[in-house]
Length: 80
Image (cartoon, rainbow, N blue to C red; front, side, top):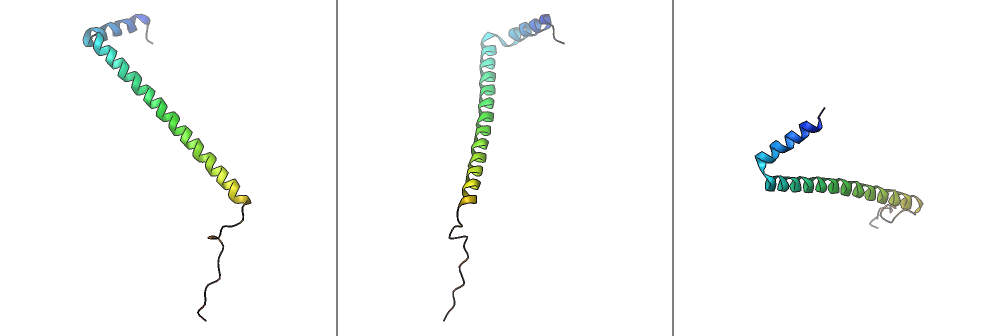
C-alpha cells in the first residue's frame, strides 16, 4: 500500500509545511494523548476487576453468614 518512498515524500511535505518545531510539538502532544488514553483504559479495567472481586467476596461472605438483624423480621408491636 504505502511504499517507503511515498512515506518519505509525505514526511518531507509535512516538514516543509509545519517546520521542525511545530512537528516536534505535534509529536509530543500526540504521544501524550495516546499515553493518557492507554492509562485511562487500564485504570478503567483495573477498577472493574476490583469491583468484581469485591462483589464476589461479599457474595461468598453473605452466603455463609447468618442473617443480619435488619433482615430478620420482628413481630409487630401491639398496644396492650
